[in-house]
Image (cartoon, rainbow, N blue to C red):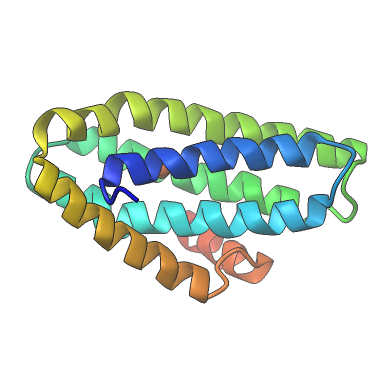
Length: 164
Ligand SMILES: [Fe+2]
Ligand SMILES: [Fe+2]
């Protein structure tokens, strides 16, 4: 498997899209899909902010504004995620509404991240550096998954921190 950070990030983005499809379906276990999505969204965003964004920014390969904007969009995503996690039963009106909001927020972010930060990384970062960054990204992502970062208390704390 590739350890290119751009490929690893893109692979997660496609997983988010698969999980959103499961969450829209009336068949299948939507609670489990939401737990999986929550953990992956948080671990992915935290690993990007901890390992990927700062390195790209420091070496001026990616615009400061793009990185700041990416982190703001992560915070918006966590807020929309928390709203969905707080819905009691999958499938009702409230579920559909919160799911649509989360899906819109995340889709917007993925689109922008792929067009700005990831394309800049492709154009300016050497393959060796991209592989090293990919390994750091995976380590950090696993660290957050091991902390069970998708649970509602954890997401609530992240939202609180970003609002303070
Ligand atoms: Fe991403
Ligand atoms: Fe991101």
